[in-house]
Amino acid sequence: MADPTGDAGDLAQTPLTHIHRELGAKLVPFAGYEMPVQYPEGIVAEHLHTRSHAALFDVSHMGQAVVSPGTRAADAALEAVLPADLQGLAPGRMRYTLLLNANGGIVDDLMVTRPAEPDAQDTLVLVLNAARKEVDIAYIRACLGDTATLTTQPERALLALQGPEAAQSLGERAPAVRDMAFMTARRVDLLGADALVTRSGYTGEDGFEISVPDDAAETVFRALLDSPGVKPVGLGARDTLRLEAGLCLYGHDLDEHTTPPQARLFWTVGKRRREATDFPGAAAILAERERGPARLRVGLRPEGKAPVREGATLVDPERGAEIGVVTSGGYGPSVGAPVAMGYVERDYAAPETNIAAQVRGKQRPCRVVKLPFVAHRTVASG
Image (cartoon, rainbow, N blue to C red):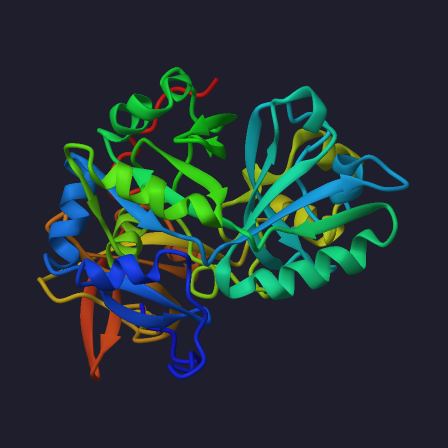
């Protein structure tokens, strides 16, 4: 999970970096920040603890921003850069969506939330990927012009509490979160802090993402760690959890040359937007959807115990011809075996298709499987 472009001498820190050191975390450069990749128990133990109890992640390196109306309503203006039906997004609801370029390529994936509070329902709250937030902000602002205003929130921290005991832990401190449904949002008082809580996450487990002012982050983090069953977990386990859940990571499974149909994310294109064909790259995306993408994202189960890593070439095992590439790969602690995702030519994308990965000059047998590797255990949607 280390970022090879990070400069260890010039890394940003989150409001919780000193706590990670105190807890014995291994800190690595990631997206320009010094971030905990693991704590002393290690990635596998942290991963399994998340699946069985509750994990607390510091994800304050993510970008947070608010879009406010300008010459147009915020939702109508923001639809200029993504395919979601934001005008149909109800108060207190959130949506996973994509920033798209003019060719239909994916600039980033992000979360968009409409606050439930009456005085904020004309705004939209964005959470952007850490490694792409500067690109995203510049791109969105350029596209919005004076139609709406994007304001960043660098003064807010972001925590993720994930796992089957997350609701019990957070509910003891903010009872209003207990009845929240998946993909909903609520502003609550959390230990005296103004917190925007969403029932969401990146692990496939039930849980919450909690945005609080920087000066409240330590109080909230320590209080949640005091809950029975809650442990700090780093970015290493966050990556293995999202891979088992079949969730994409930008820069690996998604990029500006990948389209929603190829990534099996066409469901992010709202029905109204499909009919209006008014989103970036609409003509190319809809035509590709109609004829079928030339390549598709798939799950892979390699034979044996060793992981198949990102970048491995995928081939037809009989002809040896290149048919795709692995984009994410590792050991799945909950699966008890290596798992991977990648893109293959459409003819090889059906589940149970036998293909191979080239690893150190040899073919490693792999089987195409349906995603996710581990079933999601989120609560019912509202």
